[in-house]
Length: 187
Image 1 (cartoon, rainbow, N blue to C red):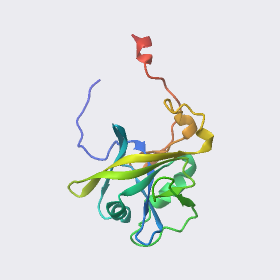
Image 2 (cartoon, one colour):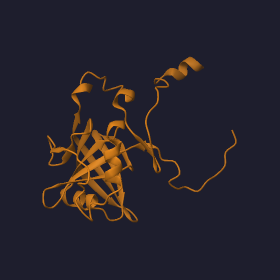
Image 3 (spheres, one colour):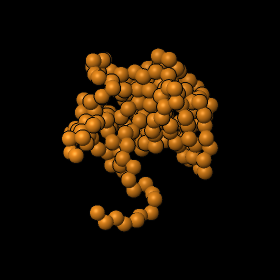
């Protein structure tokens, strides 16, 4: 296979999307979209999230040191698109109806429309050139009751239906293509 070189940019970064929930100074909820989010593990599971520029959500995280990460699925992509296309610094995001409650372990807003939510406590903030990297310990995971019997070691993404973001486009997962260890069959 012949390859060519391209400029490192935002050309290919498919990833699940999360609606990040924070608490404003007046104790109301604020939500925004973050796609620069990944996971790590150091004795406990952590979320690594990068946010650039000036954002109300970023200011809230810097002050409160807590946030929720609400998985975006095919069912709530419309809400994610709304939160991603509106700025909380300008006005309260209330042009569409949504419901939330406060977390079970942390004072973070949790969207009722999300069926998989992480409640996170920031352990470390790394200042980058124009961005901040947040390393947060996952203190609680809330999942919809419909998934209580799902094998959590082999999560069925076809049932969970996460939306995938690839710059300026949303996708869903189409089919399962294999399981870990199947390479042995192809030797």
